[in-house]
Amino acid sequence: MPLALRQVTPDDLIPDAEFAKVRAERRAALLPAKRLRRVALGPSCTVYFESFETMLFQIQEMLLTEKGGAAQVPDELAAYNPLIPQGSELVATIMFEVDDPVRRAALLARLGGVEDLFFLQIGADKVMSVPEGDVERTREDGKASSVHFVRFPLKREQIAVFRDPAVAILVGCDHEAYAHLAVLSPATRAELDKDFA
Image: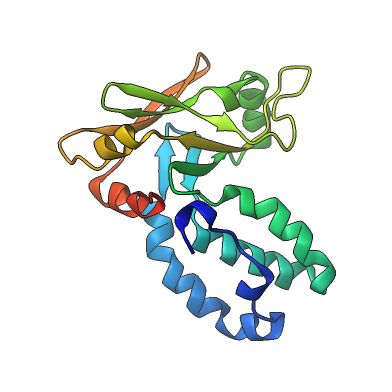
């Protein structure tokens, strides 16, 4: 299936009992790619770049743990298929991860609107994130969610620059209360390049 049309379908899923038998093996096989797709952004934020494989595993996990059977499948596909990159973009789950609930609440209270301020720096181009429109990620009181789902749409020329090893590629956040940058390693860039058609 072309990358631009890649979606998890019911045909991609295996029964829960079968998945339970291969779950540990599949998790272990996916772990090297997931490590490369995980980028620390400052002290409290992690960017998890998603793929068809990470979403397929997540759907199987949800079906296994929630035990909703066939009736649950459409909801899981609707929730996770939008997080699969479609050939000219990178898609990420971004999480603010602070163990202490008091510190976490204080940080999130200052981060209203952060979902609109993540970006990729690709050479001279700054590609701003486009948040998923499923739910509001900032409350009326200005408190941000700890989890954000965003996409970074890239033009063909930007993908070509992304592939140029001489050009540094960064992921960042422009929020005044959380301004941070992280350089993507060559190994991470090679892994993410698989998302482009």
